[in-house]
Figure 1 (cartoon, rainbow, N blue to C red):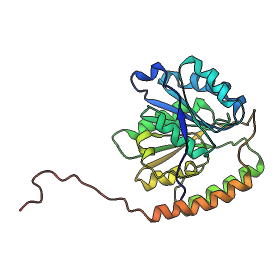
Figure 2 (tube, one colour; figure 1 turned 90 degrees about the vertical axis):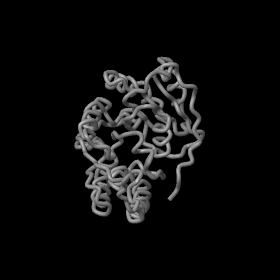
Figure 3 (tube, helix red, strand yellow; figure 1 turned 90 degrees about the horizontal axis):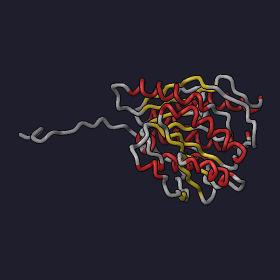
Figure 4 (tube, helix red, strand yellow; figure 1 turned 180 degrees about the horizontal axis):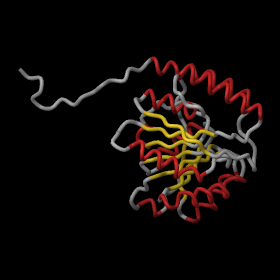
Length: 266
């Protein structure tokens, strides 16, 4: 399966990043989302300020004014910016953002404004609750119960979700929702490949983790246009689906125990 080979250039970190690491980082991949930059960042700041979160935006080779608008927002000193020299896809952008983030926990959301940043605190609280007394990987996945998309997109999404759940056994109603929350270290240990962000539940289960779905708000797109077509997305998803199935079958999770000095000696 293809590996991530994004060429990312990080700008010098602002001074505040030299302080204690934040508990949570919000990673937002974008491509040609200029009109959505300022409104969405304002919402993320308002929703996550009580959590002490940092915001990491990854510009995946935009050709519009996305980079200029991010530069303007960065004047506040609380925005980390990463830029891919060329577009490598949403999964590659998420990987670059997670690598640049400092938080132990990562929240992701789409940059088109359809995910509601106000849902992040609830996902974070659920993650902390699930993590109590456990070191197993944990994924909290948003579930868009009232999607504000076209009828065609809703139908194809329902079909794809049911087929995927049947084939992979991930028991997740909405893997396409961009709102997800997980530990940074757990994510970095997963196999990385193009479109992996759509299969995070199956990948977390493959790693011995747990997945919980939480209902979240979904909003209509008010600015810009989608970077994806319904049919081309479906065709790619089918190919990726069988790739993930191959990954599941080609890995046996070991039960490892540490051997203390002197054990096993005659």
